[in-house]
Image 1 (cartoon, rainbow, N blue to C red):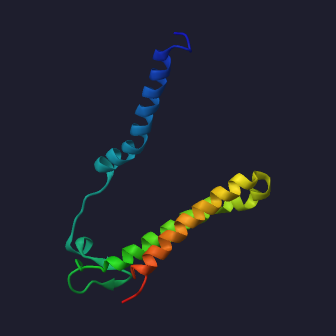
Image 2: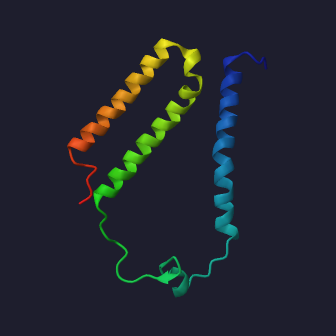
Length: 123
């Protein structure tokens, strides 16, 4: 089979897909057959940080925790984009500087919006 045909490329992708699916599933399936199964009340009990659980574990969390976590992730990702630019900003020129200024301005407007909506205030 010639190496430049469409069939060869699709065959390559098919083999790659089969390997990509089989590789993580094989240990999971193997663990179902090999792992010991000895359930008991002690093993099924809730346990956290060396202290036995008291009360119901299904409690409602404030949505504010999730908003803070989301804001952290957004600004953490912002740093991932800004750091490489900051290293080579002199070689990139004015266009890259203006693009980064627009990027930071969009994020700043988002922060100002969240601040005005009082999302970042702890109650």
